[in-house]
Amino acid sequence: MENYLVEKATRRIPLCWNLSETAIARLTQLMVPQQLEAGEVLFRQGDRGTDMFIVVEGTVKVVLADEHGRELLLKETGPGGVFGELALLSQQPRAATVVATAFTRLLKLTRATFLQFLNNNTTTGADSVQSSYRDLSQQYKVELLKRIDWFASLPPDELALLANRLRVQKYDRHDIIFRRGDPGDAFYIIVQGWVNAFVTSQEGDTIVLNQFGPGDSFGEMALLDNKPRSAGIMALTPLQLLSLNRAEFSAVLQEHPAVALETLLGLSSKLRFAATYVEKAIVWSRRIADGDYSMVLDEIEATQNEVVSALQDDDVSVSALLSAFYKLTQGVQQREDKLRQEISALKLQIQIDEDKRQEQVKAITETDFFAALQAKLKEIRQGHSPDVSAQTDE
Image 1 (tube, rainbow, N blue to C red):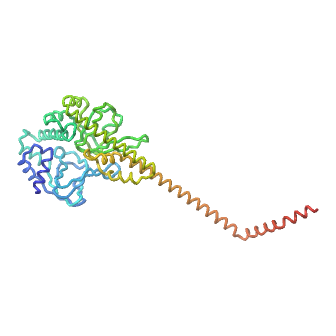
Image 2 (cartoon, helix red, strand yellow; image 1 turned 45 degrees about the horizontal axis):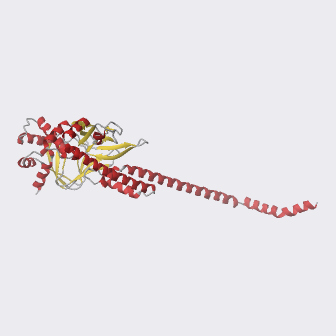
């Protein structure tokens, strides 16, 4: 059963797509067992990537620390799950950290073992590690294109031609791929790494709208309407992208009507998403205006640490997209709490001042001098009227 799980997982890896059943079985024999205790880190973001892993038992989580130190959960992987396969193509730094959430058994395949296996056991015609690398890179591009609705209907030979048009681009962490308002001239697919979609408020604050990771795409609207970018994109990690410019995309649409149809379907989905966005924004805004922050904060908190994939339902996606409300709502609530504290402190200070005044008055009125002064004043008041009468008779 375990062998079947591992072989099935291996067959799903794009790099092993063309291997025979016998070759896959042989490859799994070369994998090395590894164990992790709950909470143990397998590798950290930034570590050199050289190995691929298959989960046999247990679970691991893939996490990313954002610029505020908050842990973003990218995904969780259980038995049969595969991660780190891009390390078999390159030795770039890991884009995220992997931590065991329970006792976990893994199988590890190193880059050196994999490339040596290809040279010894495949008939791809590759006569060196370098040519194997090029073949695998091309194959991986095709597999990424297959995941995008717009291109999924293309036959394999046309996908291969389209993959040849894709240009590889690399960025460092915190690099800006483009900003809101920039000319839109290319569409991007993430090969490795993670990005933030963001806008900048009038006050200069950066508001994060969403995060995207390996296999996700962005920027496609600019290929259709020739308008400026509606949001910016920033690299959260070292990043590798595949890009397709407008001229190449237009040629694809003309040559493949099926892609044009899938494009229209994709736009329809985006319109539904936008409608859900507006609906939630109205509801949440009303709640905030009424001073009811708890519902908004609770609903956003539920999706705050998750990176949303394109396959999730619109309500979940919109909740993550509207995470900017989290900052807005917290800010308003914090200002109100601070104002209440200041008013309470002011009332307390007034009460303290009044108590002090009364104590001072009491201290004065209870002295012998004040008592004698009051007695003298009483005498004067009582004797004042006869004196006045006497003065009048005279």
